[in-house]
Length: 450
Image 1 (spheres, rainbow, N blue to C red):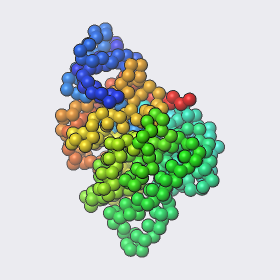
Image 2 (cartoon, helix red, strand yellow):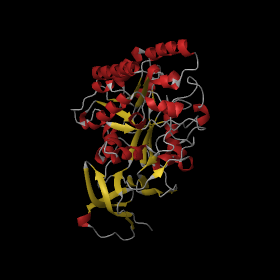
Image 3 (tube, rainbow, N blue to C red):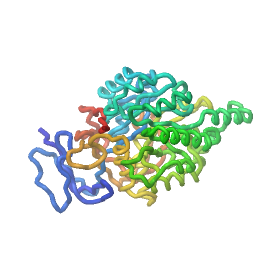
Image 4 (spheres, rainbow, N blue to C red):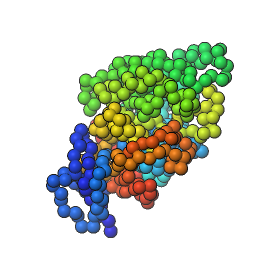
């Protein structure tokens, strides 16, 4: 019988340090963390993994995904997308409420948790959704068992748009836990659409997407959210910032653990810019829009100076057939979980960001921001969510190695220098060199909120 895993000779990246060492994992937990100069005896029955040359990091926690389950499973589902996530080094995710039906009641929320327990290879949490008329359901949310309340302060998801001022005031004042917001001003977007339709009719070129879902639309909504949070003392998390201008709303002097208002940037806003629309078209149509190269550079600066707290994906798959539609009919969003960590490690390889910063923003910070219990760090007594990566294994993203149910990626044709070799979820080796062990599923995330 396997008595855990003894990982040795790894290059550990954790809590701002990089050092040679290893861990002993058993019973789902990290039992021992050691340095190479202090090798303990191998426990009887443990499987030894010699990680010579590999980097060991905590499992990535992605606080924003759309896995389309239930109701939209022709695009994606909890099984396929969690599998892709685990292959990409993501061991925990937080999934959004704009499924069918929308997650607007506690009963529907718990049904999603049941699906997660049955299907997900990674650990999971699900947001409670907000609408203009479900405040009483929001107030029933258990902060220790649910990652947060999701408020769409923008037109991204149809009738989940929360645009009633009184409702917004009540949510920000009374929400029992973290409020996560999608910020784009609907009035501004509608006016931009009107102008573009006058010029182009229905055939608006995709290159105009960042002018329709503009900097002004983002800033108006983000600044409103921050103002409401300050007024009511709300624990606010602003999702997927896409402009340099918005960064002025966030403070990088307050330590992360004490921040009332936190912010996030997504991989696609750090990687792509408006010049890529000509090449990739609707495949990089996201809301908020990918904007200028100057915005991208400002977002990278915001990451480095800690105005931006978290790196996430906003993984939101659609089929290629759906994406091939004209501008107004093509849905926004794309798949990212399999490639987010290695994309950021590519930025490390290029000297843009340190590997310590990548781990801070993708592993530690989500755990701190959401107060995830016993995850996000390589610490004794913590859940053994761990990833081994080889920084010297070049490979190209092709249709043949994409795991998303939708079967495509905006990174197709991109060569990355790094590859995930092992992913442990709660001490279970769920992924190893392209092979999955699906015999044990992920767990529901618990939050240490007083």
